[in-house]
Length: 428
Image (cartoon, rainbow, N blue to C red; front, side):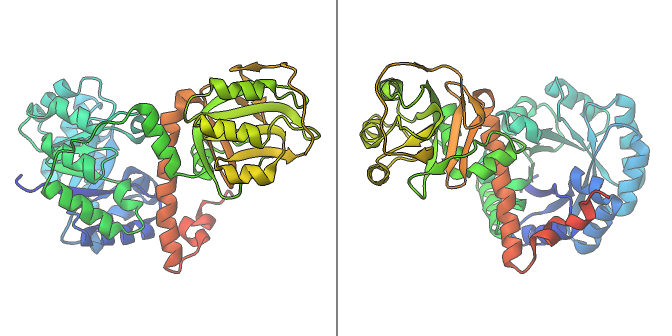
């Protein structure tokens, strides 16, 4: 194939929204339209029939992820109007061979999806021999959240088969261009187009990138830098949504108004306003850390004030959280770093030295370990377990993308309940 094919994956559950997004994507340069697995599970073959009727000049892909009954499911999709039907590469050979025979009978192409395949290069060669028409180098969304990349999978199989190869999973204008340079004939792009506020512009950006691909020679970021950059681009509510409504601290208020705070936790335990360990923690802190202080919610005495805040600012600390009180609030506001506390009190404690730095603590209803990630804004503060920080950041970004598209649809006159089809999904 001389010109790369841009396939837009409609992984939504609402058909009406999917049709509108597909229309805008085609206007931006998309070639093939995929009825994604969530859409098929939600709407059945009506999703394929509707897309066929609405887009007679575009190829329609039915992402059935066939794992059994190859003939029956290919027949269903073909009769509904699909041009390409997807089967899981991990399926038994008999399923794939039956799907290929049904594809020949009904005049549709069979795309084999390498999702979760343990030996992708070997399996790709086997699939070609069985008569599969297209191979999809696919990294699933849950795998993407943990850092796996479709381009890496693509490189494993590129050149080993003579049939067209597609790349799928987390592609945007930059990674889609890289996939083309790595041998992809078809670019299966989902959320970077379908969740954009301006779908047409997003599709056009990918179209331009894959038609004239270029190598990004920029320096690769460290994992910590990538986590920090993603978290700075999302909100605390985005993060707790990504964590299934977990991780939010309770009772905190931002003393500095409009703020944004992201960093690794440096934990401090202290009691009754003893400010020795909180202040000593400033010397231990690394640039970008958030000092998290458990003062047992003592709001009658403060372990933190303006002098400590200035000292933390000089060390590059990005924020302070106190399960307890702070003082000198008027001066703290002038320093330039966020301070969250459960209260304020002008009384200062004494530097007695009780407590410890770096131990696991309980703070505002959450367990916090040294090195856990913290995000805070005017909505509050969320604790992210360090083992899942990258995955959570990536999932939060997907939450933000979804909200961007919904926000755009509301601007166009829809309502939140109608966009979400709440009545349809209510528990009866």
